[in-house]
Length: 476
Ligand code: SF4
Image (cartoon, rainbow, N blue to C red; front, side, top):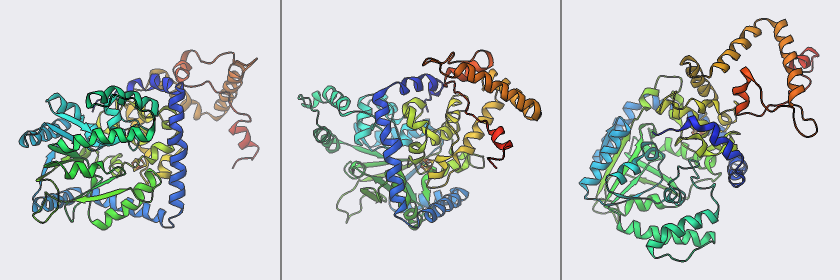
């Protein structure tokens, strides 16, 4: 997984000053949470479902091998094949081999975060295959050579004018020489161009929202129906998915289904919920002749039994992103990783490395809202804290910050000195950071405070201080 998270601070500055991007972020930060809360409040058992969903996932992870083998047995029974991939390299090689076996040239894909993680498109295109994303947002992102902005809405930050420019440039070779600005017409144009790709595809690649161990079925949950066309029209359907997607039974899947769309987009259910098992049978009206599932590990089993094991419960709803004050200020591409926001701050160090993703667990205010909304109750802040500790242990934290924390800890053990020092610091900060004639005396700190103010505003401390309020008995 290619990670460029070390540039987080620079990209965050650009994102904050990008007015158009900030307008796009309004949808994620304000609209999605409102919709989620409204739909959740209409379901009296929503909180009980979250508990149930957490328990199902915990139980499955404790018996992961058993359920994955049961799933494999059922798929094989139905005439499909299951392939096991330990790494991204192995997964990409398996998919390439399967495409070669099918004599494929044209490949259609449905949105799948795991294939983004594997960088499967780049791999297949590099081997000479023609690969096209068919989810509208993902298709736009592919044409623009960008990374998804959000796991649920990969292109929702773009304006109609930007999409119009992108289509005008890309679709001329498909005979679409007239520039279209209207949103409905843009969707129509994408549909016309993509229909031809669907008709000519040799292989369809999809992810899977769930794998059902008792039946050997894979579940695809979408709003556009493109995944169903990718799964049924080509002669070969390849499912590429993470091993953590398995659930024991259809009833278990139903529990997760009831909280997924509500948490993601505030819908009671997504437009398309489809289950697929094996290739087309004699009596089937349609379906692929071949059905292959590639189960991807790529670092997931290394997470089992560690403080970040609970992250494997994630059902990729995106609710934690929408509730995060950092994500909704800087947007997904700032993170430099396929996975962004609070879930990305935990996934990325686990799948890549702490050193390449050290900035991400620090991109959090620790307000705890992500854990509040997570449908499977993943304790995201405590896992980010775990990565921060690992970062500290590996001496990746800047020396100024380490030194500052050391001083703070030393003072913390000496209450009188601590009070005197914080009072003095408060007076000093008020003197230099409080605006006079519209501008503060200084907007940055020298020496030990330099690193802190390089990427943060120099805030004026609030009065009265917590300690003085506590002393007066106003906060207990
Ligand atoms: S961590 Fe929880 S809230 Fe975030 S995407 Fe995963 S399931 Fe959804």
